[in-house]
Length: 501
Image (cartoon, rainbow, N blue to C red; front, side):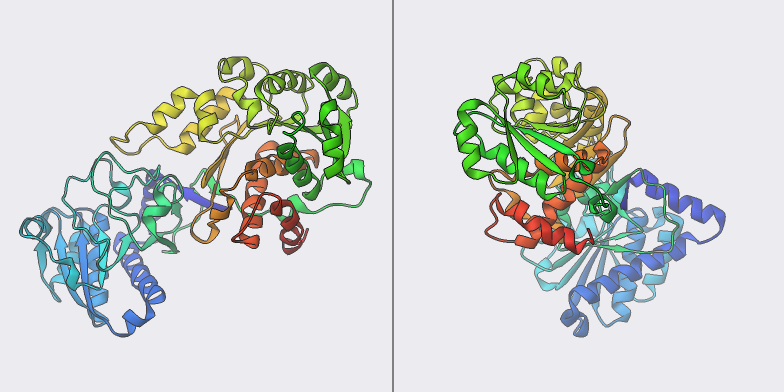
């Protein structure tokens, strides 16, 4: 699991290392600047081999100090460098001031505000370095920043100017300088993987500057092969998942979920459908068993068999059937995934749902469903982020999980999974994990089935939801363009094999 940090956590790690005497601020700044230059060479080797003209925009803090180091290293490597500082050189922090003095031996420091008033011609540059504000930004950027969208390649130092490092949201209505490449240090920040962060950062490189690991509370989801491996034993040793279906002509979503649960390793999977849908389901399913589940009373009777240890309901149920079945399912106190109609059915009274939920449940809302269950949290998340640290999707999901008393998986490119205890994970389907093909009907139903299958196999809810999110994206990436939801379960065997399952 890769850790992600808030800006405050990163500052604390740096301060602790400096106070312990293991490193100096100047050394960290030099390593950071060298990391940016190395990343530029790796990203654009042709430009590095034939250096052109570079624009460095430096800010009034230590991010600006990194900019002075980068300017010096680029100049030494043969680039023509123009550096513009926002603020006064005399007011720079000590380490940044020291690097400004080192730069002065090679080139001039120009006043950024004056240059912007006159009109800064960016077309003459092949490379632009955004070292203005970094992770410390807490208010909107009032500068009329130059438009670099059709000009040089833009490299952000730590995080693009204008972006909140803790939420990935633009701060206020200020400027946002989008980058082609972002180089951050030690660990990813939350703003790199949430909300607008991935789109604003371009490509992302994490450069090691020699700090000790630790200090973060939230990690990015990575695969755990132990969660996928099956031990020796009979089918009931790997759990029995029950997926509940809607009526005739609306069984497809539940069938997708059931197939995913079986593919991910549940020992048995049963689809519970009303009588009018049995023939339709039987015509489509072979390895998945069928049971007549007409209503909540029938489900309660069926759950007298305690070998049915995980349930999934919501996809394609219809709100009335979903509410009836959800009440019966939750009374049984089994591991339960609630999605789609099982969430929408309680939109008029979310507290009625929360009163019945228990720690073995997983809710999987998309944005609209989240807003119906947690309208105050959704309103706060959608309100303009006037200051940083801004309220984030991570904050909202944690609060939702605490209120619901169970695990919540808030879907999206930046999927956030949080338990009722506050433990949280993020799966970011961006950068090298981008999977745009998942924007297809039925993909969410497959995710529901993956979670149910892993719950049936005995994984804890936070782990089951996190690993299912990873598998979901990995299957989409492996299949690639042209993906439809039916392809996801069929791609799982290759994904699991690659993980040594």
